[in-house]
Image (cartoon, rainbow, N blue to C red; front, top):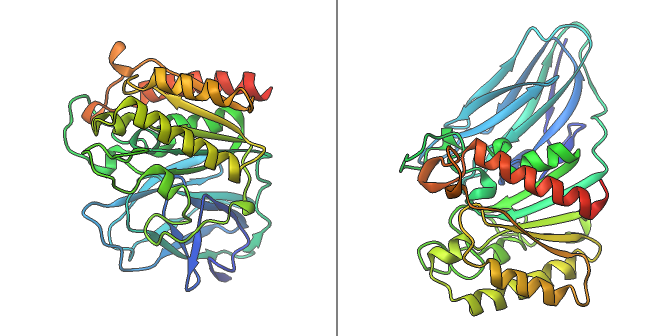
Length: 330
Protein backbone atom coordinates (compact mmCIF):
# COMPACT_ATOMS: atom_id res chain seq x y z
CA UNK A 1 0.00 0.00 0.00
CA UNK A 2 1.24 3.49 -0.82
CA UNK A 3 -0.04 6.97 0.10
CA UNK A 4 1.30 10.14 -1.53
CA UNK A 5 0.05 13.32 0.15
CA UNK A 6 0.84 16.86 -0.95
CA UNK A 7 1.79 19.12 1.93
CA UNK A 8 -1.09 21.55 1.59
CA UNK A 9 -3.54 18.64 1.96
CA UNK A 10 -1.64 16.71 4.65
CA UNK A 11 -3.21 16.45 8.10
CA UNK A 12 -0.50 18.21 10.13
CA UNK A 13 0.50 20.92 12.57
CA UNK A 14 2.26 23.86 10.97
CA UNK A 15 5.26 25.14 12.92
CA UNK A 16 6.35 28.75 12.47
CA UNK A 17 5.13 31.39 10.06
CA UNK A 18 4.54 29.44 6.88
CA UNK A 19 2.98 29.79 3.44
CA UNK A 20 2.07 27.36 0.67
CA UNK A 21 3.22 27.70 -2.91
CA UNK A 22 1.50 25.50 -5.49
CA UNK A 23 0.76 22.90 -2.83
CA UNK A 24 4.26 22.87 -1.31
CA UNK A 25 5.11 24.16 2.16
CA UNK A 26 7.68 26.97 2.12
CA UNK A 27 10.04 26.92 5.10
CA UNK A 28 11.41 30.45 5.36
CA UNK A 29 12.37 30.88 9.00
CA UNK A 30 14.52 28.96 11.42
CA UNK A 31 12.46 26.38 13.37
CA UNK A 32 9.68 26.46 10.79
CA UNK A 33 8.27 23.15 9.64
CA UNK A 34 5.49 20.69 10.39
CA UNK A 35 4.63 17.62 12.41
CA UNK A 36 2.30 14.76 11.62
CA UNK A 37 1.37 11.29 12.78
CA UNK A 38 1.10 8.26 10.51
CA UNK A 39 1.13 4.50 10.33
CA UNK A 40 3.70 3.09 7.91
CA UNK A 41 6.93 1.13 7.85
CA UNK A 42 8.55 3.59 5.41
CA UNK A 43 8.13 7.33 4.91
CA UNK A 44 9.65 9.47 2.17
CA UNK A 45 9.84 13.25 2.29
CA UNK A 46 9.83 14.96 -1.11
CA UNK A 47 11.13 18.49 -1.74
CA UNK A 48 10.74 20.83 -4.71
CA UNK A 49 13.82 20.98 -6.96
CA UNK A 50 15.34 24.39 -7.59
CA UNK A 51 16.80 25.37 -4.23
CA UNK A 52 19.71 27.78 -4.83
CA UNK A 53 22.07 29.13 -2.17
CA UNK A 54 25.80 29.48 -1.59
CA UNK A 55 25.70 26.74 1.05
CA UNK A 56 23.36 23.85 1.84
CA UNK A 57 20.41 24.38 4.10
CA UNK A 58 19.77 21.82 6.82
CA UNK A 59 16.63 20.26 8.18
CA UNK A 60 16.18 18.08 11.23
CA UNK A 61 13.72 15.20 11.07
CA UNK A 62 12.60 13.65 14.33
CA UNK A 63 10.65 10.39 14.34
CA UNK A 64 9.39 9.05 17.66
CA UNK A 65 11.98 11.15 19.49
CA UNK A 66 14.96 10.13 17.36
CA UNK A 67 16.47 13.04 15.36
CA UNK A 68 18.69 13.17 12.30
CA UNK A 69 20.06 16.07 10.26
CA UNK A 70 19.88 16.30 6.46
CA UNK A 71 21.34 18.71 3.91
CA UNK A 72 19.24 20.36 1.21
CA UNK A 73 21.49 21.33 -1.69
CA UNK A 74 19.21 21.40 -4.74
CA UNK A 75 15.73 20.55 -3.49
CA UNK A 76 15.89 17.39 -5.55
CA UNK A 77 16.72 15.37 -2.45
CA UNK A 78 14.41 12.84 -0.88
CA UNK A 79 14.63 11.83 2.76
CA UNK A 80 14.00 8.12 3.25
CA UNK A 81 12.84 6.94 6.66
CA UNK A 82 12.62 3.16 6.63
CA UNK A 83 12.26 0.19 8.97
CA UNK A 84 10.08 2.27 11.27
CA UNK A 85 8.23 -0.77 12.52
CA UNK A 86 4.60 -1.48 13.28
CA UNK A 87 2.26 1.02 14.88
CA UNK A 88 1.92 4.79 14.89
CA UNK A 89 4.80 7.20 14.36
CA UNK A 90 5.04 10.93 15.01
CA UNK A 91 7.36 12.89 12.76
CA UNK A 92 8.57 16.48 12.97
CA UNK A 93 10.54 18.31 10.29
CA UNK A 94 12.24 21.62 11.10
CA UNK A 95 14.45 23.96 9.14
CA UNK A 96 17.44 24.45 11.45
CA UNK A 97 19.58 26.89 9.43
CA UNK A 98 18.73 30.37 8.24
CA UNK A 99 18.84 31.66 4.69
CA UNK A 100 16.94 33.86 2.28
CA UNK A 101 15.95 31.01 -0.05
CA UNK A 102 12.91 29.01 1.14
CA UNK A 103 12.98 25.23 1.36
CA UNK A 104 9.88 23.83 -0.32
CA UNK A 105 8.54 20.57 1.14
CA UNK A 106 6.39 19.03 -1.53
CA UNK A 107 4.88 15.82 -0.18
CA UNK A 108 4.96 12.96 2.28
CA UNK A 109 4.88 9.45 0.85
CA UNK A 110 4.03 6.44 3.03
CA UNK A 111 4.67 2.79 2.20
CA UNK A 112 3.44 -0.23 4.16
CA UNK A 113 0.83 -2.94 4.44
CA UNK A 114 -1.58 -0.82 6.47
CA UNK A 115 -0.35 2.75 6.10
CA UNK A 116 -2.48 5.73 7.03
CA UNK A 117 -2.20 9.41 7.89
CA UNK A 118 -3.54 10.04 11.38
CA UNK A 119 -4.46 13.15 13.36
CA UNK A 120 -1.34 15.10 14.39
CA UNK A 121 -0.33 15.39 18.05
CA UNK A 122 -1.89 18.10 20.17
CA UNK A 123 0.09 21.32 20.15
CA UNK A 124 1.34 22.73 23.46
CA UNK A 125 -0.99 25.23 25.08
CA UNK A 126 1.85 27.66 25.81
CA UNK A 127 3.15 29.82 22.97
CA UNK A 128 6.39 31.82 22.76
CA UNK A 129 7.54 33.91 19.80
CA UNK A 130 11.14 35.08 19.41
CA UNK A 131 12.42 37.98 17.31
CA UNK A 132 16.12 38.55 16.91
CA UNK A 133 19.37 38.19 15.06
CA UNK A 134 22.17 35.64 14.73
CA UNK A 135 22.09 34.71 18.41
CA UNK A 136 18.49 33.56 18.10
CA UNK A 137 19.25 31.73 14.82
CA UNK A 138 22.07 29.80 16.48
CA UNK A 139 24.81 31.23 14.25
CA UNK A 140 27.99 29.22 14.76
CA UNK A 141 26.70 27.45 17.85
CA UNK A 142 28.19 24.13 16.72
CA UNK A 143 31.55 25.66 15.72
CA UNK A 144 34.90 25.69 17.45
CA UNK A 145 36.11 28.99 18.88
CA UNK A 146 37.76 31.32 16.39
CA UNK A 147 36.12 30.03 13.20
CA UNK A 148 35.82 33.10 10.97
CA UNK A 149 33.58 31.86 8.15
CA UNK A 150 29.84 31.31 8.32
CA UNK A 151 29.09 27.66 7.63
CA UNK A 152 25.53 26.43 7.65
CA UNK A 153 26.53 23.00 8.96
CA UNK A 154 27.75 24.74 12.14
CA UNK A 155 24.38 26.40 12.81
CA UNK A 156 21.49 24.65 14.54
CA UNK A 157 18.58 26.67 15.85
CA UNK A 158 17.52 23.78 18.10
CA UNK A 159 20.78 24.22 20.03
CA UNK A 160 20.18 27.96 20.55
CA UNK A 161 18.73 29.63 23.64
CA UNK A 162 15.28 30.28 22.12
CA UNK A 163 14.49 26.72 21.16
CA UNK A 164 15.99 25.40 24.39
CA UNK A 165 13.82 27.79 26.42
CA UNK A 166 10.60 26.81 24.66
CA UNK A 167 11.46 23.14 25.02
CA UNK A 168 12.17 23.54 28.75
CA UNK A 169 8.83 25.29 29.23
CA UNK A 170 6.83 22.92 27.04
CA UNK A 171 5.81 25.71 24.69
CA UNK A 172 5.09 25.96 20.98
CA UNK A 173 7.72 28.17 19.41
CA UNK A 174 7.96 30.60 16.53
CA UNK A 175 11.20 32.27 15.52
CA UNK A 176 11.71 35.17 13.16
CA UNK A 177 15.38 36.10 13.17
CA UNK A 178 18.05 37.15 10.66
CA UNK A 179 21.78 37.34 11.31
CA UNK A 180 23.39 40.76 11.23
CA UNK A 181 20.22 42.80 11.61
CA UNK A 182 19.39 45.36 14.26
CA UNK A 183 16.62 47.65 15.42
CA UNK A 184 18.10 50.74 13.73
CA UNK A 185 21.15 49.58 11.76
CA UNK A 186 22.75 46.29 10.91
CA UNK A 187 26.23 45.22 12.02
CA UNK A 188 27.86 47.08 9.11
CA UNK A 189 26.14 50.36 9.87
CA UNK A 190 23.53 50.02 7.10
CA UNK A 191 19.77 50.07 7.51
CA UNK A 192 19.36 46.53 6.17
CA UNK A 193 16.22 44.49 6.75
CA UNK A 194 15.66 45.56 10.33
CA UNK A 195 14.02 43.45 13.01
CA UNK A 196 10.99 45.79 13.27
CA UNK A 197 10.65 45.43 9.48
CA UNK A 198 10.56 41.64 9.24
CA UNK A 199 8.46 41.49 12.40
CA UNK A 200 5.63 42.53 10.08
CA UNK A 201 6.12 39.84 7.42
CA UNK A 202 5.06 36.22 6.92
CA UNK A 203 8.14 35.23 4.95
CA UNK A 204 11.72 36.39 4.87
CA UNK A 205 11.96 36.84 1.12
CA UNK A 206 8.47 37.64 -0.11
CA UNK A 207 7.76 40.13 2.68
CA UNK A 208 4.00 39.54 2.62
CA UNK A 209 2.19 41.25 5.49
CA UNK A 210 1.58 38.95 8.45
CA UNK A 211 -1.89 38.68 9.99
CA UNK A 212 -1.15 38.84 13.72
CA UNK A 213 -4.65 37.73 14.65
CA UNK A 214 -3.92 34.19 13.42
CA UNK A 215 -1.47 33.34 16.22
CA UNK A 216 -1.28 35.17 19.53
CA UNK A 217 1.67 34.20 21.76
CA UNK A 218 1.65 34.18 25.54
CA UNK A 219 5.21 35.54 25.54
CA UNK A 220 7.18 37.59 23.02
CA UNK A 221 10.96 37.57 23.46
CA UNK A 222 13.04 40.20 21.67
CA UNK A 223 16.80 39.68 21.50
CA UNK A 224 18.11 42.72 19.64
CA UNK A 225 20.74 45.41 19.93
CA UNK A 226 23.92 43.44 19.32
CA UNK A 227 24.15 44.52 15.69
CA UNK A 228 23.13 48.11 16.43
CA UNK A 229 26.22 48.20 18.61
CA UNK A 230 28.33 47.05 15.68
CA UNK A 231 26.66 49.69 13.54
CA UNK A 232 27.59 52.37 16.13
CA UNK A 233 24.02 53.51 16.79
CA UNK A 234 24.01 56.14 19.57
CA UNK A 235 22.34 55.05 22.80
CA UNK A 236 19.59 57.67 22.64
CA UNK A 237 18.72 56.79 19.04
CA UNK A 238 18.63 53.11 19.89
CA UNK A 239 16.47 53.74 22.95
CA UNK A 240 13.90 55.71 20.96
CA UNK A 241 13.71 53.01 18.29
CA UNK A 242 13.45 50.25 20.90
CA UNK A 243 10.56 52.09 22.53
CA UNK A 244 8.72 52.38 19.22
CA UNK A 245 9.24 48.70 18.52
CA UNK A 246 7.89 47.74 21.93
CA UNK A 247 4.81 49.89 21.29
CA UNK A 248 4.20 48.10 17.99
CA UNK A 249 4.60 44.68 19.57
CA UNK A 250 2.10 45.64 22.25
CA UNK A 251 -0.32 46.94 19.60
CA UNK A 252 -0.52 43.60 17.79
CA UNK A 253 -0.07 41.37 20.85
CA UNK A 254 -2.21 43.08 23.50
CA UNK A 255 -2.16 40.21 26.02
CA UNK A 256 1.42 38.95 25.69
CA UNK A 257 4.22 39.21 28.20
CA UNK A 258 6.92 41.13 26.30
CA UNK A 259 10.50 40.38 27.32
CA UNK A 260 13.67 42.01 25.97
CA UNK A 261 16.47 39.50 26.53
CA UNK A 262 19.91 40.96 25.91
CA UNK A 263 23.61 40.65 26.66
CA UNK A 264 25.08 37.35 25.41
CA UNK A 265 27.38 39.25 23.04
CA UNK A 266 27.74 42.47 25.01
CA UNK A 267 25.81 44.89 27.20
CA UNK A 268 26.30 48.21 25.42
CA UNK A 269 22.58 49.08 25.48
CA UNK A 270 21.69 47.44 28.79
CA UNK A 271 21.29 50.73 30.65
CA UNK A 272 19.13 52.36 28.00
CA UNK A 273 16.97 49.26 27.62
CA UNK A 274 16.49 49.10 31.37
CA UNK A 275 15.42 52.76 31.36
CA UNK A 276 13.10 52.45 28.35
CA UNK A 277 11.35 49.38 29.71
CA UNK A 278 11.10 50.85 33.21
CA UNK A 279 9.27 53.77 31.61
CA UNK A 280 6.92 51.45 29.74
CA UNK A 281 6.21 49.50 32.93
CA UNK A 282 4.66 52.60 34.50
CA UNK A 283 1.57 51.85 32.40
CA UNK A 284 2.27 48.29 31.23
CA UNK A 285 3.37 45.84 33.91
CA UNK A 286 3.84 43.08 31.33
CA UNK A 287 6.99 44.42 29.74
CA UNK A 288 10.28 43.13 31.14
CA UNK A 289 14.01 43.50 30.65
CA UNK A 290 16.12 40.39 31.25
CA UNK A 291 19.88 41.01 30.97
CA UNK A 292 22.36 38.16 30.70
CA UNK A 293 26.11 38.27 31.18
CA UNK A 294 28.23 38.13 27.99
CA UNK A 295 29.84 34.90 26.85
CA UNK A 296 33.26 36.59 26.94
CA UNK A 297 33.17 36.51 30.74
CA UNK A 298 33.10 32.71 30.73
CA UNK A 299 35.40 29.98 29.51
CA UNK A 300 34.47 27.81 26.54
CA UNK A 301 31.26 29.64 25.58
CA UNK A 302 32.41 31.12 22.27
CA UNK A 303 31.76 29.53 18.88
CA UNK A 304 32.11 31.04 15.40
CA UNK A 305 32.91 34.74 15.03
CA UNK A 306 32.43 35.56 18.70
CA UNK A 307 28.96 34.01 18.88
CA UNK A 308 27.67 31.75 21.64
CA UNK A 309 28.42 28.07 21.25
CA UNK A 310 26.12 25.40 22.66
CA UNK A 311 27.40 26.01 26.19
CA UNK A 312 26.81 29.75 25.98
CA UNK A 313 23.41 29.24 24.42
CA UNK A 314 22.48 26.79 27.17
CA UNK A 315 23.42 29.30 29.88
CA UNK A 316 21.31 31.94 28.14
CA UNK A 317 18.39 29.52 28.00
CA UNK A 318 18.73 28.83 31.73
CA UNK A 319 18.57 32.55 32.55
CA UNK A 320 15.57 33.18 30.32
CA UNK A 321 13.72 30.02 31.37
CA UNK A 322 14.10 30.91 35.03
CA UNK A 323 12.80 34.44 34.39
CA UNK A 324 9.79 33.24 32.39
CA UNK A 325 8.84 30.75 35.07
CA UNK A 326 8.64 33.65 37.51
CA UNK A 327 6.86 36.07 35.17
CA UNK A 328 4.32 33.53 33.89
CA UNK A 329 3.94 31.25 36.89
CA UNK A 330 4.94 28.29 34.73
